Amino acid sequence: MSLPDGSDGGSAQGGRLAWIVPAAGVAAMAAIVAFATLDARMPRPGAVQVEVKLSSGPQQGAEAAPDPALVEDSPDGPLPIIGHDGRQAWQVYARRFDATDRRPRVALVVGGLGLDNATTNDAITRLPPEVTLAFSPYARDLEGWIAAARRAGHEVMLGLPMEPADYPRQDPGPKTLLTSLEPETNLDRLRWVLSRGTNYVGLVGIMGGRFATDRASLEPVLEALKARGLFFLDNHDAQGGVLATLGPALGMAWAITDRRLDHEPSQQTVDQALADLEGIAAQDGAALGLGGLYPVTLDRVLAWTATLQGKGIALAPATAVAMRQKLPPAP
View 1 (tube, rainbow, N blue to C red):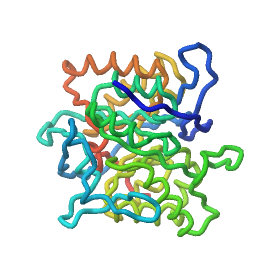
View 2 (spheres, one colour):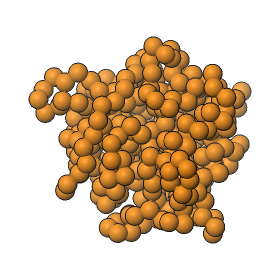
View 3 (cartoon, helix red, strand yellow):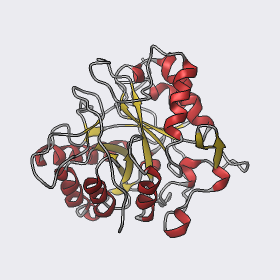
View 4 (tube, rainbow, N blue to C red):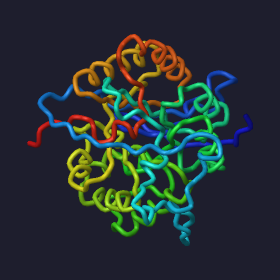
């Protein structure tokens, strides 16, 4: 399959999520894109589950093209909108999932795609189509990458750069949403990110240790995403941000990260995170893990998915766990 080229990315460390380019140690890995460290979360007892009936859209061949009724031609470029008939991008572009499947669901999102040709190609072609792929907004020919991923059966998200706790020492990149900016300026930056591609289901945070915990800054962004029919995935757990409160209050499609797959890119770390996700899903009904493009992550995910049939666990796209995760009781 002929796929577009990528470009370079940013960096992050210490408990926040980002897309980084580690130092190349081997010739085949000239620029590996991965997510940075995220603290593991503990199981969440005594919480209330919210259910949603997901209306899944087409995924294969020509049907994977964007729906013109869900695209607004704006001065910023094409932007997602809710259709006149009420259809929303997070449902229409979702990968099909059997809503009657009562097995515990584990969703995996692999992010940072589009910045390196080889690793992006690996993720698109090697990972099971149930795995959701998230692309950097800084990728070149992003539309081409998204089209390739959807032809392979994956649902797609875009990364949203947000202010980390130690900004500007750590900088997610141009158009980063900042707590120091007026809401309208952040919304202008959001529209730039949204205009970078089409037929994606929503956004996942890049870094955001400060922005994602600032309700006054985050709420207008979430309201804008809801108004455009998009899903938002917080790259922090329920204890680390305000999405767990704002998402249900706004009535939008949301999810949080239960486990970082590769805060250390090793077989032991990835295997333990996947085992943890199984436990959370068995207890709560749904769990979501977030990882990067480390070769070991792809290899261990592939090995793990081969074991699921005998475990009674369903590998699900991210949209199939939207609003299904259990949250801690309100303080």
